[in-house]
Length: 333
Image (cartoon, rainbow, N blue to C red):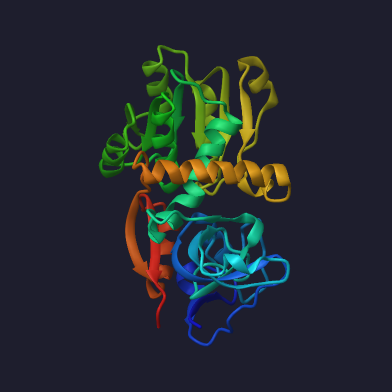
């Protein structure tokens, strides 16, 4: 089968190779094989290529952490009735979604309604499930609160903007440059701060009359996190969603104490290994799919590409030059 393979660590454009003779993976116990119909790109795919992600599959491996496909084979312990069903999941490495076939863990895959395209399903899974869990399960966002969303034009940030608006929050988004600012406005953000031209800390204080944001959604980390602490409200919740900026922050406990805010981690992988966690995420997925069917949310798909275009697309993603999601849908050789 055709698959993108990482054979040594490095930048995506240097180490990703499209191979046409990769063996079709066989599903092990509790696993299924899917015929991939769409796969969405994420920053962790870049980090996997570099060897700097928290997961370290043996070389060679296929990246791709967000995919939708039709189940074509099942491993021991999986009911055959799922064969032929369209599912979306985070594939099991080393058999990621950037290939004609991928491996899903049966306990962590979710059905896709007929009304939802495979492109939309693949582009929705990580951003909207993560944003939903962050805002509602971890931050308990309430109507009328101020929500500050960093990287509001990115995949996860654009999901947080939409879900925040639906929750009745006053959404302030940050973005870099006029095009990204305009996208955040189109998504419903009440205020948008161009962090290239403005100091977001002072602007948030101005917009909230000095009170700060009740919830901060931060997928960037580093200096963005550090500066966000200065515009987080008393009893605020600062959500650590990711480190797209490439810099890990430290958390000064004394500052959290004196300003009385909470630093809240959001890692979806933490819910995969318990029945309670899997049930919670499955419920979130059902709600997100229903919102998608009702057209109350919509993933921002900026580009649809083929497998051969992935190395360049991941290079752009790693440099933070992209908006929304890039989705792969050309898998046929």
